[in-house]
Amino acid sequence: MNAFTAPPCNDPSPGLRHGPSHNWRPFLTLIMAMSVNGIISRAADESVSTWSSAEDKAHLDRMIAQHKTVITGRESFAATRSNAPSPHKPLKDGVRYYVLTHDEALWRKSAPPVTYLGGTAEDVLRRMKAEGVDRAALLGGPRTNAAFLNGGYVDEMFLTIEPALFCTGRGLCEGLMRDDLALELLSAETLNPRGTLLLHYKALWDSPPKAG
Figure 1: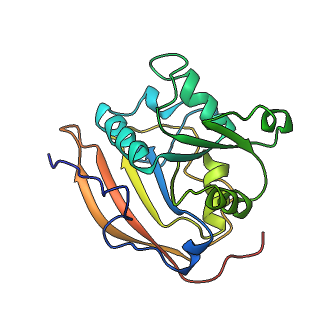
Figure 2: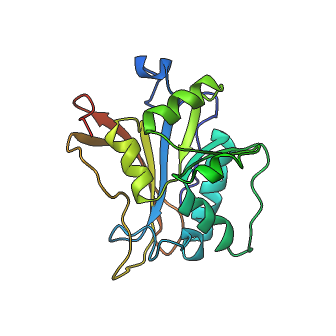
């Protein structure tokens, strides 16, 4: 089993550097765990932590600690906190959370370290950059992931493939409107004897964002 060494938090991952687009937005890393058939959750209120491996949980903790900023959707945020092995899992110290929601009542309940907000993916990224965020981890549900993928804003992906097969559930994204994303594999790690795989990809965008 190969040990995974994450990149330092003050520099993008190996093979990736900030380009012109990062003058106005943070460098964005999509981090997901899924079954071998691409399911990230079997229900909207299920947290992946209920079935993912201990090695993936350790990887996720490292990545969050390095990025120090998380983007997620309301359902995913609630599921992570309520369905974790420890109910109402506390937020990680020193980490800022940007939680996307259409619920304006929640917007008014924002308080450090959690910011509830709406708007487009571009709106969210511009606000984050204005607030001093240079790098963020995207831990969305399917719709949140699609919003940032549709904008062409994802720079890299860490995908954990767990040796599990689910008949039904939700995939990595819902509502993806682009077909011009290619991925370049930067590294592949086997995390445990069961065969959990950690794949690190660079995102290669071939065309400007499509109108949505």
